[in-house]
Image (cartoon, rainbow over all chains, first blue to last red; front, top):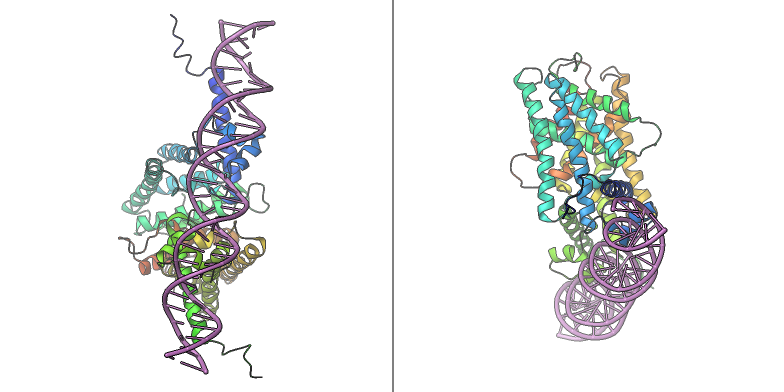
Length: 210
Length: 210
DNA sequence: TCGAAAATTAAACAATAGTTCAGTTTCCGG
DNA sequence: CCGGAAACTGAACTATTGTTTAATTTTCGA
């Protein structure tokens, strides 16, 4: 008997299914941008894809699983930039990189959707996973700030408080940013935020990013 | 015929009723701190007061009205500190005052409840009122920043972007602050935030608040 | 092209939670 | 202390919405 149980790791069908899953996540993020998780119905999400809500159950076991997938989407992005940041030398430059990339995630990947922050409704295991992921990223930021202080590049602030302020400024983007909305451009926003938030840490008034 | 239509402006009964309304608002803010508006049921709110949810309808016409009252609670606080700030001289000192007071509202009055930010569910008229109030406060902050730039006290940033960052840092407190939670103390937090966020604007590296 | 598996749908189901209402208890001013 | 008004309750009602199931359509590999 040939091995029919385990096909190729990414068959055509599997890739198509994975693509559809991402479309659903994208639709959920878009729908959630307006109303938040609870006010977003499965009809809202399905309607954006031109299908009925029952079809969603072929890709996710329930509504919470869609929310969790949205969280994972954002978490994997955060993990990626945390990894990439290791190649950037110097606490100031590294923190600047992290802020600019985080702003990019907020404006591009999540498009300002607050879905990736509503964590209280998730079942305990899923909530723990998400919180662990966020804590990890928070820890990376704190590490960078602490390193900058030790090296004398930053002044002696409480890293915990500084990181809360930074994450607040960036995450709050979900509350006011709307893609295509006039005025503020994503790229400029990331630079402006990094510039502003870095200067608050700089020991000297000169350029925060040498 | 004596004037029985309009009793004294604050009879005993009226004051008692007003007090009960405030208790309900407080309970809603507490309950909403854990789960957010949609996940907070009328049973949650009523339960904290030892009554049944039907009793709430003697004080508010529906659930949305309770949310609106929570918003108005926070808006009136913001308006108050905006007014008080006019007595503080100099953009740097005034901005510092506003940040510290705003932090105090987040930690003391709202106790970290996100209820005063969930605006999308409100009916159009109520939503417009809340947004108008928040815009007004935002405008005050922008004015202070712009004034500081004109006077040469702050460097030339985009006031809009800076205020988004400031409001994000402060409002995000609702996401992580828990009253009585160990570690961070409200008073110290306000000073630390004001210090950090002011330095990002300061033209010179010296003390931001002279 | 054929047939099985995947995708989707329509309809019914279930559970939650906001709302209403008639009736009961509590409160308080005269 | 009395009587009416205010406060509150229990229960029923309703609307929304997540979930399940059986049936139908579509897709795609052999």
